[in-house]
Length: 182
Ligand code: F6R
Ligand code: ZN
Image 1 (cartoon, rainbow, N blue to C red):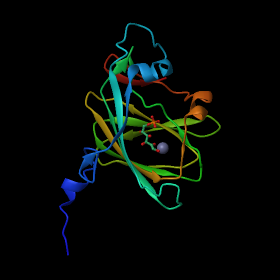
Image 2: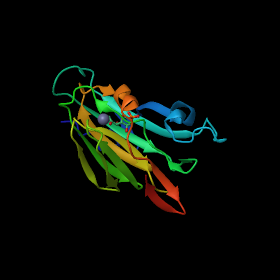
Image 3: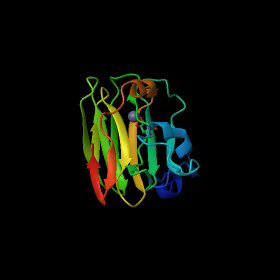
């Protein structure tokens, strides 16, 4: 029997699967700028805001297969507003998701289809269940990199348009060193 050294093969903290980093996307400020409340006040549009590492099984359309992801969010603010992910609801709303905090401090914003929103604090080792009927967005509220792992059904699909049409009613700012949700 062959024994595989697990860390060399899969390393969830660094986005490595089968020995290779599996970065799927890198969001620069210019990619998400318009989602911020005050987008055009001299912010550098080339700043890296967040990266998503993702591993999806080749049989992704089969029901029952799982995807795994790591989101790495940099400690950035845009005119006082904390760095946030684009946010989505799953296309198939019967598909939930687990999020788990790995490093840094942040918030998981959740919103139901009536527009009611709330937040859960994320910190290393925290575990969060996202019901498939909830839109979800991460916010880095700390001064360190926020790393959040995730696991979801591969057939869930990501509906970004829904969140664009139904924006989160909460924004998170840094004011006088404090975290303020408005
Ligand atoms: C997958 C999931 C996460 C996000 C990631 C980036 O279902 O929820 O892996 O995809 O945190 O956020 P978005 O995709 O909203 O830019
Ligand atoms: Zn999701």
